[in-house]
Image (tube, rainbow, N blue to C red):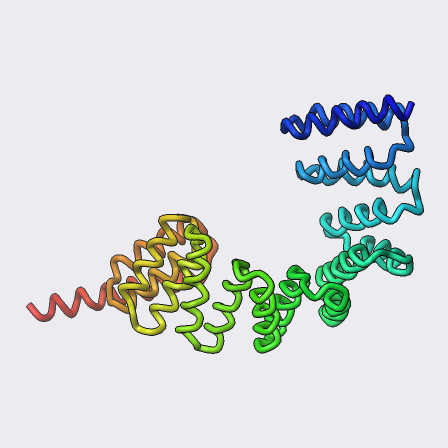
Length: 304
């Protein structure tokens, strides 16, 4: 029976190599129907469902695996991960904390600590999340995902020096890490270090030229240092890449307002209003812009 099962597993792998997910699923289901104790088939099938975004199907498969192999670490770990993705951090934590008591190899315990941190982050228990992130980093000092989450949490807690240190550490490990450069730019902007912020966002564009959010950030940074032409240029580039970048349109309208180009500002903000009619802030901006436009027209009329 095991030999027959392995034949179907091999066929499933070949189907995956060809990109035929449906056929691979069929082969793996045949394996489990013939041999319910074939643990790798459970994992492979759950992995396919996860890749396809079918989380309920993946959950059902891995729950069966845990029923058959209640002591298997990997099955329980996958189950907890799925529960976490489904926004069930309490259930996930129950499994993670049980696994924490088991003896694991170095990589398993590192990933476990990180996922426990993710679960506490989902529960908004940031102190506990940071504690487990530090434990993960004690095990693996090059764990960039842990530094990234740590930087995010510290940034949210307004600990800019701590967040900066975390993102700088990521760049030491991986100089091409886009989000670390992007977040450093944001931190520098919070510190009003606009030249440093611009440098980080230009690095993002060197690494990924179509990153509209970096273009938007650059546009606003140039506006803040008085280089309005550069500001307009980068904001327009952001909108060429992503016309639905709402903040870029809001920022562009603000730059136009500073240049007293009220018609252009109104055009950008009117687009936003139509896209997001419940946005109260944009209604306020439009009212102010139209008031200024009307006032300017009256002044010009009075000069004649």
